[in-house]
Length: 393
Image (cartoon, rainbow, N blue to C red; front, side):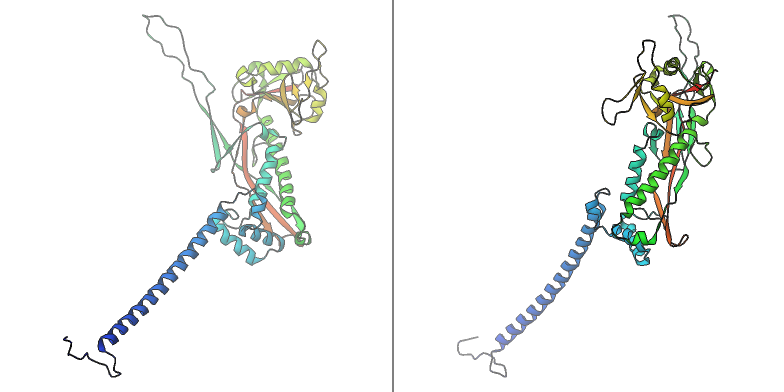
């Protein structure tokens, strides 16, 4: 456009070029605002997702035994609410939380288990004076556990340079299958007691269940018949150790009807193979221990010695003594003392999970807590355990 030309004007007297520029700028600003709003919306959604994932990972990473971190956990609050009042909403909240954490409800549904309660019960079982504390304990997910034992020896012989090699004996392997059985406890409490917020519901529940389970297990590991319970060490065939064969437990007679002397204790120690004797432990109840601690050797020294430090077990001929009250009292032909390497000789197989079912309906106004666990046990090496028979033969 030359200097003499007049620019095109709009109806308002504004140059047309200026009007077009203003319209373009307005459209650009409007599009920019829309883009900004869309970006802000997506950022907010992303932030919400990250916050939710962070919360889930934080909750899942919380240690079960830390009481201070459990207080605010959603599954903990739901468990407390359900234990106190049986509220359906609390149960639904617990089930929803369990889907992500798997810490409160098992996959088969209907079971409640608080991780802190479960750990308390397990710790009591481990510290109880029973065969469990000295036996081999394995966790399994199946219905049974197989122990493979090689109790024979391979043949060998001397040979010279020119003679042909002869075939020797081949060792054989036995399989011992340990079935898992269901152990249950059914303590109860009144609803009024549960409603008292100052009462430690979890501690009380764990204590009752742990005591019941500990007593039931201890009895079964000693004398269980294997029918819907573990098979105890005293429920196997017993033969004089002089004619012992695999599949039986060897015993040493005291030579005194219903009583024991120092010679019998010495004999049973050396009836056990040297490979087992290094990890040997005596097992007896309190009454039998009262008899044994009075025994002296030929020089007048007591065979029994108390532990030198707090918590250290007493020792008999230098070997630790486990006081298991389910062992039989001394009597005619009783097997009141066991000695052996129980880590090798007895195996306990159990499922790692503990289940607690709350029943507020069957025993109103009381609430029943039905707790179950799967456990089995049996002798896994018949050469690793010897018995003392309080009899003449």
